[in-house]
Image 1: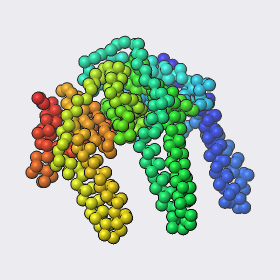
Image 2 (image 1 turned 60 degrees about the horizontal axis):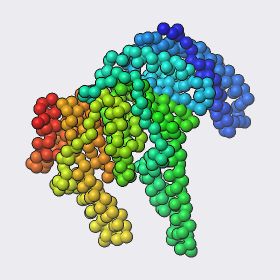
Image 3 (image 1 turned 30 degrees about the vertical axis):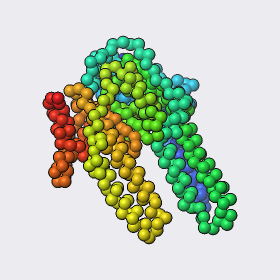
Image 4 (image 1 turned 90 degrees about the vertical axis):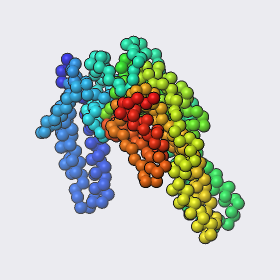
Length: 478
């Protein structure tokens, strides 16, 4: 058992630097607006001295202790506060190693528990030695060795300490990830539209020459957005490594700030395969997961999900996952498409878009024919999107406990693997018109991380709804 110890002295230095920068900003503001009314030179002493004293006292009164059963943090000068977290409550340990920390083998550690619903770690240790993190992981591993509680059916177990399944993200994959990122694509389109709207075409005299110049400018700005996205993605996923260390998945990534994320295998809740329309064309997907507790490492979290395989071939994703985590024993999805080629479902999926954009297009055709093409294009896109969503909505009940749901979304697909134990409750709802046609909606309300999420199958027939309800109530689905 280790004794209570202070954070590394580097934590005090960083705190003092941040304090100095804050006070410098305040004094600069006062000099700008009140230089003739206030004795600014005295503000340095009045602000700096007590704040430095407070920072030193805060460092002196903050200690942490690592024992074989728990980790604790004591803090507070006047109001004492102590947090004790048993290893049984730890859901994830996150490490950040900024560039300045690396030569000294220091790291920033955040520890999550299942009780946190925000993005802040339950215990936050700004600067400690990496050896202390290794000690935490050692004790946590000893505690969790025989306490696996994964929700998925597990016919495959492993006690091997030798895991050679390492996933590396190549430079080519990083480039593809950035180029197929929906946010990059839409950002480029928005910038193009914004520049197009502010250009005064009516006042341009040499129209043909100006159109060429403007086109070059627009393309240049779009390329800048793409390059910025590639650069951001490159720094974020530089030397991305995913490997297994006993009962934990370890993710290491980052160039200037190296980050290490520890994910306990037994805390995994749901698995997601997310493929947008751009990645679908090149047969690539992203594999994500959620774990019990909060996800404090925001840089590797997308919509509350931890990114495990940022980009991987669609056919290899499940095989790679099973090699890395054989306990899950997840089968390749054999989705039964429950609304495929259903003309009525196509109408139901897109009816409001058809009606609204159809009427707008017809109205503009009489008053402003040139502008009627915009809602007409949206109408056509909505029509094909409704067909796509209808033909890609499905479900597979893989076992008495496991289920897979697929949803079409913006010409891409989202596939969700989850356990019946993760279903908080199941909602069956319909309307008068849908009821007459033996249709309705069914919604899985899932425990997702430290919150809830919904997975909804829409406009499905009553017999499919009954089979899903039987599965939820643990009845025979044959």
